[in-house]
Image (cartoon, rainbow, N blue to C red; front, side):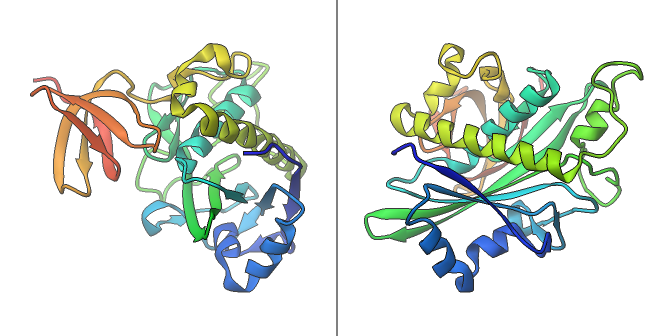
Amino acid sequence: MEMGKTVLFRIEPVLIQSTHQSALSKENRPVWAQKLKTNKLIVLFASLQTNGIGSHGRKWVSDKEDFHVNLIFYCDQILPFSQIAAYTACQLLARETMQTERFKMKWPNDVMVEDFDGILKKIGGCLTAVRNEGTRYWVTVGIGINYNLEDFSNIDQPTASVKSFLNSFPKGHGLYREKDFTRDELFQSVQCFAELFWKNLALVQKNGLKVFYNEEKLFYRFGSKHYWLYLGQKVTIFDEDKKTQLTGRFDKLTDDGALQLACDDGKTEIVLNGTGLKPAENR
């Protein structure tokens, strides 16, 4: 993939239904196609959205201005785009909070934070749509990160935001924060995310996902194999394709983003579509 100019397009009005819907809209396709003639990457950013989309058709709650982004680009091969985006989000949040081991990528596409109460909480998520256009693919990657979200009462899993994470520091600590992130601050985070994602995309295209297991080749100390939640541990997961629960050691991710398990019976299982990844119970 050629490294090229990255252009950030801000969606106006700021309040829209969904950046993902905007990216996929048939009416907008000619607009994106025209933009992509001269730019390698389009970044759609809405600080507010009224009908955000999460994985498995869930609604992405947005009660405040926050980080809602869709990237649009062409690629000559299908890559694990959601995993690259989730990994990039961990890098971004580690840089911004200086907490290099608190942020995790939960396969296949969740961004997690280990709060200071020791509980893993979801702080972001990714989803991808790919369209074949002959010799290349049109791709949009959606990423939502909770920066300012405070009301978690309608969410069916432990959830955090960057603000709530920083609020868990003692008052007087340099990272403690009571104020919401401003639109300008969110905008700067979006720019940083886009630049990191583009570099990571090129790395994976050249070297495969294994590049993310080698800390020496990543950016400063904010690239870490520790971002992969449960890597090297015994886990269980429900394989959606085989309709069965699998247990084994999480060995690695394959270059297409599938989870590779080393099972107790000596077999290797590859899970491309799975849900409910969690540590296996000790028996």
